[in-house]
Image (cartoon, rainbow, N blue to C red; front, side, top):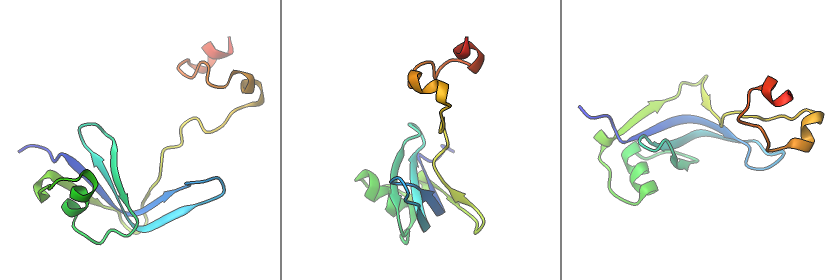
Length: 108
């Protein structure tokens, strides 16, 4: 059996759309294209079936067997990954340089 083309995660979604703003979507849904790994849509209040949500996000009909749904439990949530979220004062002059290097190589 082929794997579903789309993933939908349902539950609490948390992000910060602007500085100083915390957005909590208690009953949200997040859709992902399995092949590309890209987010295809986000819903604030996910009431419809997952296949209906994916169909609306991509603009074409999708059957339920093309969608895998993960329901988050009450004590789980999704949020964006925290990737390189800080800088030390000596690094400021070199922002954007050497992010592909291990720390010791960058320091040397």
